[in-house]
Length: 122
Image 1 (cartoon, rainbow, N blue to C red):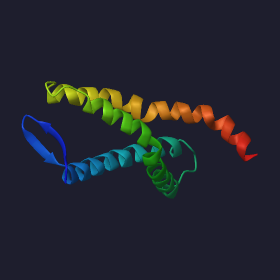
Image 2: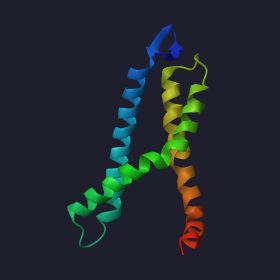
Image 3: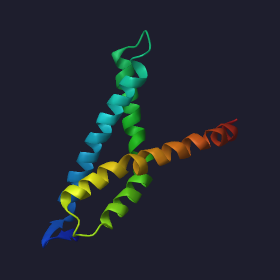
């Protein structure tokens, strides 16, 4: 299989790199889904654990595909960083840009499309 990147003459095979990062991102999405569900459901006076679980699964299943376009843009930007940029700086750039590119842009886009979607379904 082709290689993903070459950094200081270390070449990573594609499939182990891909699966490692897919699993890592799925774990982060699961954590974000749980936190979002808890913040949304717990303030209600009569919440149940099944409500949290149900909302978590909905957010997890819908959140991944919803954030794919932003994640693709984010990965392209990170891949364009010079190989001379230290790993620590790469991580800081990745952490600072991820929420804006992966989630926020698409939330604002979807929020602005809600009236259009409601008119189309009526």
